[in-house]
Length: 409
Ligand code: ADP
Ligand code: ASP
Ligand code: MG
Image (cartoon, rainbow, N blue to C red; front, side, top):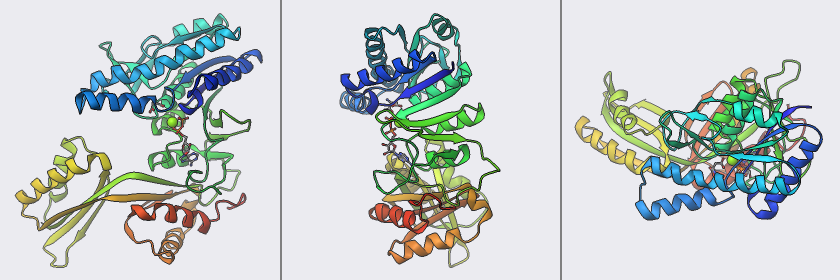
């Protein structure tokens, strides 16, 4: 008998029938004698619907009130799933994030979990009940409702699994595991039996939204066995694990991409100490996160050119700030482009292999895909390309590195 935390995403609870199906699955686990804690997302499309309601009423709504609104999505599904379990003769109790004391900081809309008090949950489990917890939400120290950022139910599940020292955290979704790339873009993509925490973290932070980044870092930090599985078909899914030295690692595990990118360039800035800070300080003060940064000495030797990327939602704000900074610094020109995307190759096997970057660049060049920016780390190579090349770029790299083949090492 084990303690399992299961999380069901929006599509998995997207209709009354699907909620019934989830209840059947939970009931099966319970009947096998396992203790089950279930975390659910809002029904698919619901969080988007709530966001657009808020925008229609208030444009840019106050973050605290937005959290009060967004948290209602998950409150609906915990109640419905508990009812469906009850109907099947499985005693269940639903809880909102604040009811089970998921304590977060006060950063509304992107709060971080600080602490979970698991007393209620333990007591219910001891009485043989299934505990159904609302994902994506918590409460700060002042009692305000907070939410954890899009995709945050994954993090609720992993945090609960860590707090309860669960035997496994199962993330049930609409694909049957983590693939070499998003199967919606490359149908030949292959399911991975396992992937390391490190690689999954890179994949998630480089745009693969199958798991929220924080859920992966939490799982790695607290050693939570984490598995991604399909709600709709049986199968082993993908296990996220530590690197196993006895197995040869795949050179490339997967390809991630991010459509939410925009880039900004400032030309002809006087080249002297403190320039980067002068340029990026005001951007950081406006709470805009900068991703890639490239600085180059201009041909005249006295000035420098600077390019960086931000989230597409922050593009206009960042451009306005940069134009202001440019005029005070006497820079030549500011330009920007919000029709770009980032494509990344990820694999721990890259550490011990040279030449991956040149194979990647050659493959893209052969297809006429122009690379606008490059950044690398030990286990990833990212390129920025025009948006129109996203599908072609991802497919080309998937083919070049033979990721559809099971034994590509
Ligand atoms: P849920 O609502 O269950 O949380 P998400 O939409 O957040 O589901 O995540 C599942 C989706 O992630 C899949 O439908 C798939 O399109 C996408 N995805 C992106 N990259 C990958 C990948 N490498 N492997 C599997 N799915 C991926
Ligand atoms: N409902 C939230 C979202 O759509 C949280 C989640 O599904 O994980 O982002
Ligand atoms: Mg998700």
